[in-house]
Length: 305
Image 1 (cartoon, helix red, strand yellow):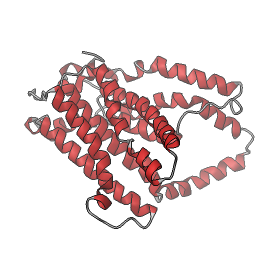
Image 2 (cartoon, helix red, strand yellow):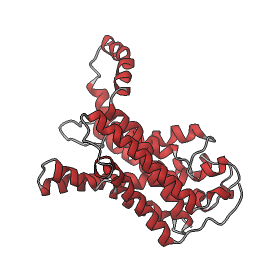
Image 3 (cartoon, one colour):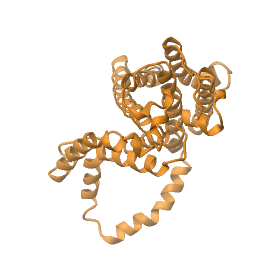
Image 4 (cartoon, helix red, strand yellow):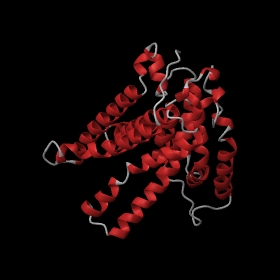
């Protein structure tokens, strides 16, 4: 990989990240607000429009990052793609290890579900397996499934991780600062939910504020984790799959009347295991062959610099 000057000022990097976050939300309202299109007549049409808008926003963010970092001066397409964490090397590690690490947070939920099905006989398990293809087909035809497991994880991780983190790294921010700063932009993209709940959904101000505040809380926490994964592994696959997995599982919940004995042990053991393995499971040398040849946007060779 060639070494070129891709530095940008901190002001430009932060402004670009803020603009990307605002644009990611604003473009969702372009069909009716800017283009004066008629209101969607169905939920499917509503989300299809949003899918297109999210794709446009993502493309613009990628183009802006490409321009600001002068990636056209790099030698070869693969070198350009690596800036965004798009790599084919060490792919199985990027797929298996981060998802396995993330699953530890849900260990209590897994044990609880296994306990709930412990009295099921063999016929019921076979029936579940037979119904699996039909369930997958239903999921593939469900617009909400596309939103939760395809469009949102991919576009959000490309914009808020693959575009913003290289900009901030090239601006000279410390990697630890970026891990905590980047989710702030990510949370901005969810403020539109307050408008939807309060102005359009008929919720009270306090109710809308509580719901959105709770959403911002867990999106910031996940944003820290996703940024950590991207910087440590240097691959976009890791945060995307973690995002999809968390969307599927939902928030880890702890209800005393559901959790007993083994479930409680599994819940806490999973949490302890997650934090104990967080750094070992994301060691850069697990995901990269030549970590000594990093450019500034690939500062996954050390956590801080």
